[in-house]
Length: 89
Image (cartoon, rainbow, N blue to C red; front, top):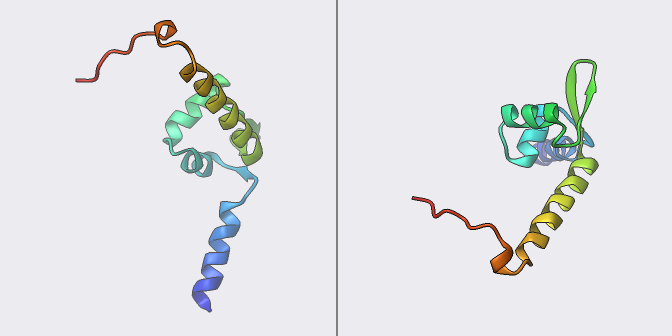
Protein backbone atom coordinates (compact mmCIF):
# COMPACT_ATOMS: atom_id res chain seq x y z
CA UNK A 1 0.00 0.00 0.00
CA UNK A 2 2.91 2.35 0.70
CA UNK A 3 4.12 2.14 -2.91
CA UNK A 4 0.63 3.11 -4.15
CA UNK A 5 0.77 6.23 -1.97
CA UNK A 6 4.21 7.08 -3.32
CA UNK A 7 2.97 6.59 -6.90
CA UNK A 8 -0.06 8.76 -6.20
CA UNK A 9 2.22 11.54 -4.88
CA UNK A 10 4.33 11.28 -8.02
CA UNK A 11 1.23 11.56 -10.17
CA UNK A 12 0.16 14.71 -8.33
CA UNK A 13 3.44 16.40 -9.20
CA UNK A 14 3.19 15.18 -12.80
CA UNK A 15 -0.20 16.79 -13.40
CA UNK A 16 0.68 20.16 -11.89
CA UNK A 17 -0.68 22.97 -14.10
CA UNK A 18 1.97 25.56 -13.29
CA UNK A 19 5.53 24.32 -13.57
CA UNK A 20 8.86 25.83 -12.63
CA UNK A 21 11.73 25.81 -15.10
CA UNK A 22 13.02 22.40 -13.95
CA UNK A 23 9.62 20.72 -14.24
CA UNK A 24 8.90 22.35 -17.61
CA UNK A 25 12.30 21.41 -19.02
CA UNK A 26 11.71 17.78 -17.98
CA UNK A 27 8.23 17.92 -19.51
CA UNK A 28 9.64 19.20 -22.82
CA UNK A 29 12.74 17.01 -22.70
CA UNK A 30 15.21 19.88 -23.02
CA UNK A 31 17.78 21.36 -20.67
CA UNK A 32 16.86 24.05 -18.17
CA UNK A 33 19.40 26.37 -19.80
CA UNK A 34 17.76 25.97 -23.21
CA UNK A 35 14.30 26.54 -21.77
CA UNK A 36 15.49 29.63 -19.90
CA UNK A 37 16.85 31.00 -23.19
CA UNK A 38 13.59 30.18 -25.02
CA UNK A 39 11.50 31.85 -22.28
CA UNK A 40 13.71 34.95 -22.29
CA UNK A 41 13.37 35.22 -26.08
CA UNK A 42 9.59 34.72 -25.97
CA UNK A 43 9.84 31.53 -28.04
CA UNK A 44 7.85 29.45 -25.52
CA UNK A 45 4.81 30.63 -23.55
CA UNK A 46 5.99 31.60 -20.08
CA UNK A 47 5.48 34.21 -17.42
CA UNK A 48 7.44 35.51 -14.49
CA UNK A 49 6.23 35.18 -10.96
CA UNK A 50 8.53 37.52 -9.08
CA UNK A 51 11.86 36.90 -10.75
CA UNK A 52 11.23 33.22 -11.61
CA UNK A 53 9.90 31.77 -14.84
CA UNK A 54 6.69 29.74 -14.67
CA UNK A 55 5.03 27.66 -17.38
CA UNK A 56 1.38 26.62 -17.64
CA UNK A 57 1.08 23.05 -18.86
CA UNK A 58 -2.05 23.82 -20.90
CA UNK A 59 -0.32 26.72 -22.70
CA UNK A 60 2.74 24.54 -23.35
CA UNK A 61 0.51 21.80 -24.79
CA UNK A 62 -1.24 24.32 -27.08
CA UNK A 63 2.13 25.73 -28.15
CA UNK A 64 3.46 22.23 -28.93
CA UNK A 65 0.30 21.49 -30.96
CA UNK A 66 0.84 24.66 -33.00
CA UNK A 67 4.52 23.82 -33.50
CA UNK A 68 3.72 20.30 -34.67
CA UNK A 69 1.02 21.66 -37.02
CA UNK A 70 3.59 24.02 -38.55
CA UNK A 71 6.01 21.16 -39.11
CA UNK A 72 3.26 18.94 -40.51
CA UNK A 73 2.37 21.68 -42.99
CA UNK A 74 6.05 21.89 -44.01
CA UNK A 75 6.08 18.12 -44.60
CA UNK A 76 3.14 18.43 -47.00
CA UNK A 77 5.01 20.84 -49.28
CA UNK A 78 6.12 19.70 -52.70
CA UNK A 79 9.66 18.31 -52.20
CA UNK A 80 10.95 20.80 -54.79
CA UNK A 81 9.73 23.66 -52.56
CA UNK A 82 11.57 22.45 -49.49
CA UNK A 83 14.96 23.77 -48.56
CA UNK A 84 17.73 21.25 -49.25
CA UNK A 85 19.05 19.50 -46.17
CA UNK A 86 22.75 18.88 -45.82
CA UNK A 87 23.55 15.26 -45.05
CA UNK A 88 24.93 14.62 -41.57
CA UNK A 89 28.46 13.27 -41.53
